[in-house]
Length: 259
Ligand code: CAA
Image 1: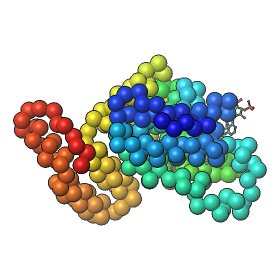
Image 2 (image 1 turned 30 degrees about the vertical axis):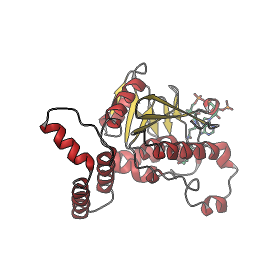
Image 3 (image 1 turned 135 degrees about the vertical axis):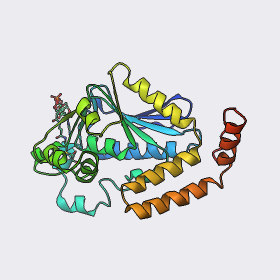
Image 4 (image 1 turned 180 degrees about the vertical axis):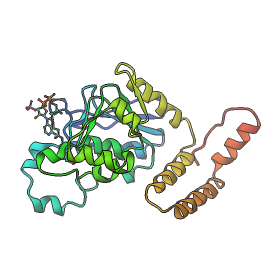
């Protein structure tokens, strides 16, 4: 397995790839080098046929405290403007496998935004979500104004981003930002269990399903339904559809071919 400067990777269970942000002295603040490491690690798991689900986590104290303010302070306008994205090539849409953010402690600014780029969020009871960029005289630049508003609605999103309201894990669960909340002692193990469950399924069916759900956020309903129908028909051409249905009828576990 490749090694990186600012992220650690491991496979704690079959089919589960873990990427751990690892810049503890700066509460995992997202500098350019860390973001490049993160994207490289994601692409490596995406390319690994043995991996069916990816977990993205930090430490118990901090998922990530945001973009690196010290690095941004020295970045002029034109340099920001000329980048295709926050970091060239940094694009979660390149990852077709499910990604679960596993969040404990601070998920602020870009940290909250990266968690929201993931497909699900599992949190510890200590997690704190916020977009405090307004205090720095800027605004979220990693999708916060769009994804958070879609997740929690306009009124709360305005309060979070204009008045630096921070959400506890319990509030984030209540407002639909996170999937599950667990005690800090067990949140990571619980996230691994969830990932293992997904990794034990047909990777083709998982990919087709993830794609179709993502379209629900982007397309008008009739176009989304059309997209779903096409993916549904496509599933009928897979070996895994034949295997999944045969296994049900024969009362046995399916042996997925991921084809
Ligand atoms: N960038 C750079 N360094 C950071 C950082 C950040 N976002 N967040 C924390 N650090 C550093 C601190 O400077 C400190 O380093 P030193 O020991 O060298 O001084 C170290 O991490 C520990 O931080 P604190 O001493 O501040 O720890 P704390 O427990 O007292 O406070 C905190 C924790 C509330 C998260 C506080 O660190 C904080 O407010 N951080 C900034 C949060 C923020 O504003 N994030 C948004 C960034 S902008 C952004 O993300 C733009 C975007 O949308 C892409």
